[in-house]
Image (cartoon, rainbow, N blue to C red; front, side, top):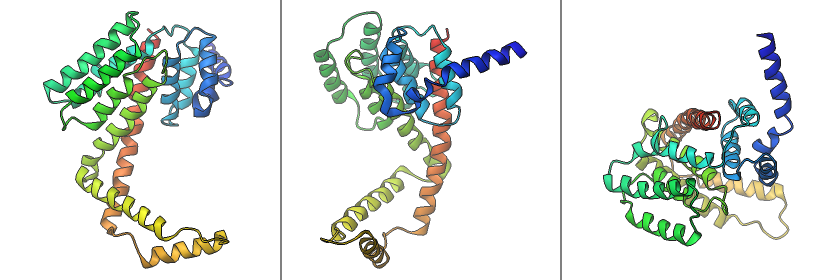
Length: 270
């Protein structure tokens, strides 16, 4: 047990100088360079970086596991994408009820499988596939699923961050949709509140441009006065529902991030 604990401490110490490359999104180029020096493909390591930044809970342990893992193989990012589509605890496939939509995504996944097998899929092929996919999906297909799959449809050699975009899109949008039921809210009510708030912000900005020579204090006072005289047309119940939905969304996001981290760890540690 003592030896095991000492080994974990050694691993954590080794990971520490590298950890900021994962947790600081502005250092993606340095993260890719670090991965390249170890023969790790950029798509996989950018995915790991995105997952590390999506939630601070469990972040250090996840980064340490990725840094420690020496068996990351080329294509692991694509293997993770295929897992997310069909085999994850909350797979993208489970959100699609229309067989037509499932077949459309399967056609995309087949291109990814060809790329994983070593075929060079050119940008023109991906452009045509994106057009075909967008035209094929039914209007009622969940946006979280559609946009996550669309985010994946790039040549990963030229656009290695595409799989990371899939992760962030899926986590954010699926969590937002899943939070409505436990919050006792609906997508329609959320849309109404969001639209009202956005329109109010535009109107407020239109009527409160900073005047020439106006200092921060004067501008802030004028903005506050406008807000008091022209309150946003939402009720206290609307704000309560919004806060409840946000809290539920955050809980779901935390669980979903952990789920997707575990999926990647399982792939790279096989």
